[in-house]
Length: 493
Image 1 (cartoon, rainbow, N blue to C red):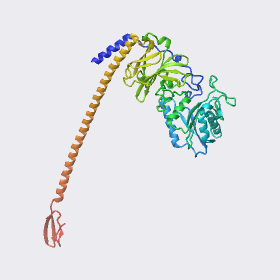
Image 2: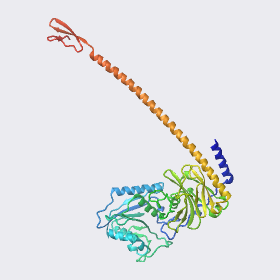
Image 3: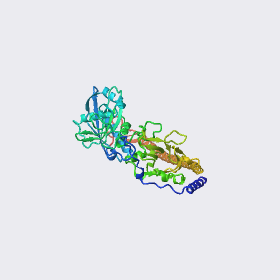
Image 4: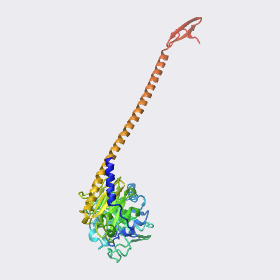
């Protein structure tokens, strides 16, 4: 009863201080511009050539055999790996996108493993300087060589993969081509064309490719395919975001904002915030609620044409996490996460009632988790210039009280769960005991009946009978368990 009273009191204080949540802005205001310097980025629009615009893309898988290497063909094991990749993409997109893998025949190359090792070792020096000797040039050569016997019609992407016995180098690289004239990072090739010009085959242009060499795992392939959908790499920094396959290759997950970029998160799950009109020095304007019971949530605060502050709520493996980070589409990596104060983890666990009172601080703003009821989280965005104000302190103190209250609720729920589990166990034990007693009684009855029947059979077997034996005019009666007539006599019929 006391806990309920405290909850009412805290709730009343919060409502009295901040009776309204901030209003969301039109989403068009939060469609951050894509980079014109990077082939893929976390901005709008995603280039028309990317797979994000194709619901169920067809991806051709072409194995290649390097000169001097053992015979190499697609096996059932390879196909099983690609089936796993397909499941990963279906999972990430919540079945919005389902990839159709088509398997081609092996391309025989004149290039050796040493040649491809050399291409990999010189990738930095050849990038946008020597197309023919780059990974891009290698891919173009292989696709054009395969054009003699491969039908590229209606193919949306091509994956080349091969191996060498020596395994000196490894390559897992997505290569996105485009005719976008606004793409500025587009060096000239020796033949006068642009580095990013699509590969022209007999059946049409190829804009999305992946090169795999001695690197063949389902998470790696999934990561590279997500580049073809339009996503960029996020690894390479201590502040790279967790819970994204683009920064952590062990997790089959994407940030809600990434999902929104490629069309896999509904607009209804995105909250657009105007930095100037909604994040003010008046803290009552800075409160937002994100209902993660309806799926992943993303709150976007544009800070420039290609930059933003973002709060994401991610549902991952039956747990829920909150991330606060900055986005800069001209930076690499494009995301810098701001972990909870006093921790190094880039995400905050919100599972159940957790996370209340936590603070995640960026250079200019602090995100305070003011409430979390297990399905919706309430955050206050506090300008750091106001973090020491009485108003902010009161907010933080109320969140601390809410945390204690929530802890009490959690304890009560845990106790209720323990009690319910104990009652269920007792019920199951009682039912098991009743079943055992019934079975024992039935067995006893059966055993007694069997014993009685056996005794009766035994008694019947030992019962004496009398027969009449005759020999001519002589007659004798013989009584025994199994009576037999004497010699010379026969049993009277």
